[in-house]
Amino acid sequence: MGDALHALDALHALDAVDWRALGAVSPDRPATDVPKVLRRIARASSTTRPEAVRRAYGELQDLVLGSAAVGTAALPFVVDLALDPKTVTVLRPDLVDLLTYLTGDGTARDDAARDGAAGQADSERSAVWWQQWPRILKLLDDGDPVVRRAALGLISDRTGPLLERWHRETAPSVQVPLLLALGRAAADEDRTKETDAEVRAVLDGLLHGEDPVLRVAAVVASAPLDPQAVSRARPMLLELLTDPVLAPRFGEVWYTVDCELPYERDDVAAWVVELLDPDMTAATSFLAALVDIGSRIGDAELRRCVVDQAWRLLVTRPSAAAAVLPLAAGLLTDPDDDVRYKAAHLLAMLGRAAAPHADRLAALLDDPGESRFFDGTVGDHARWALTRIGDPRALPDLVERLVAPYRDMQGRGYALSDPRQPDVADVLRPLRAHAEVLLPAVREALRDEVSRAGWLVRDLRDVLHAWGENPLLPGELTPYRPPAGPPLPEPAQAAAEVLTYAAEEEWHGTFAAALDALTRHGHLTPPVREALTALRAADRRFSEYGDYRAVLQDERIRARIDRALALPYAAHDPLGAS
Image (cartoon, rainbow, N blue to C red):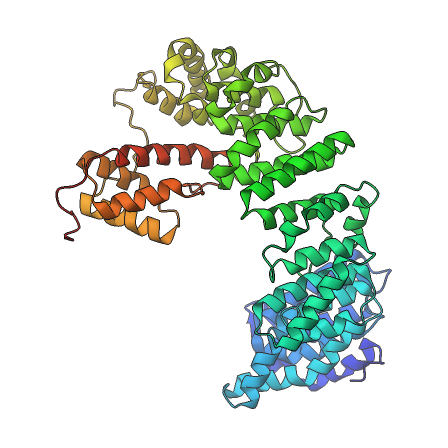
């Protein structure tokens, strides 16, 4: 199968394969479908309907990935199609990706086959991979940079081939993902001194080069090798990421090996913040500088990026609060609706710490500005922020505004890891002190929800129960019981749960119950006290959630920890330790 031949010519060899002997990939997909699909792809051209091309590729993918034997038999022919420049252009990068899945870590399997460590079937597969590997690597020199970029996935974990490719690659849209892959691969491999020096020479040279995007890429690529690389380069990164002339170029050339769509400038800025994240001061000061410049040059996209990253930090790190508070407060009057929406959301998450800005929030109660992606208005988030502060200016029309989105029988639409409007119960449940004012509206909303079999019946009844009010519906005789939490464990079990949670640093759904059990028991052992003290100082959210609820749940857990730490020492260890 010569590479210069059109794939259709090479596919004559399909008839030499006994596809029938390979059986079926699934009950309705015999292996004999493979040659049919391969020929359909080879015959496709620019005039073929795109949906037909995509459907053929989807069928091929299902067939060759659904059976190792079928994938091995089809591999040479997939290579033919990928190498052939006459194959319909839109599919060639996809075919290269398919080869990446088919070959996997080719060298490891080839070594196993040569060493006799694999079984006969594995040896046969490895032999085919080994035979095709030189042809597959020719894709790295393909005339189409999109194909070359896809082919980087074949060598993305190998420093040597990536270095070799770097010295030949000239297209920035391939150089950027190549650099990013080089940094990761070099950090993961055991490098010789010579290889290490060569990698660092490439990256250091680019840091002082003429191409500004490659300078940024060199910093990001250096991060796996040097944790301080991004922090040292903050002035340069700030200059380049806020250059309005340079901004569009990121979206033209900043690709990664594992994503076919380019990163926009704001995506790269967010990436930099994430790399700075271990140093909260560095991350938040970088955000403050970004928002300052973004405000000065009128760059709304940059300011949106800042509030999104501030939200991400606040959801995961309590220590972000001190820096996020002035940043969000300063954006309450931003001309961009989306920025104001998220700034008010951030202040709501901060709770009573936002009290100095209550007047500014109250001025936004009638702000109709909306986010591009989430329901509700700036005013809704400002109202929620005031409830978190305990400001009574939030109370008029609060219930009506909260239940309004649910009047649509389709319900609300949102992702569970975004800065969205809070759920009704999360806003109302803590407002027991204002129950007298809010009760009429809550009961009216409950009656309406019952009459229309709405979404909020349980939430509103939970609110009434939390306020100590009767949540019974007309005609009900059985006392209302809210959803039960986990039962409280015995003291020894509770102590063990706390120690395990502290050691593993992973969320345990029974952690809150364990804390309640310890508080009821009335004493703490020294090991448990030490574990809780360490947890109290930890800069992470004690929560299972990835949105505003992470902050609310973390507040409740930390309050439980404080109550437990206020207990006296135990006279004896319930775990039985001395």
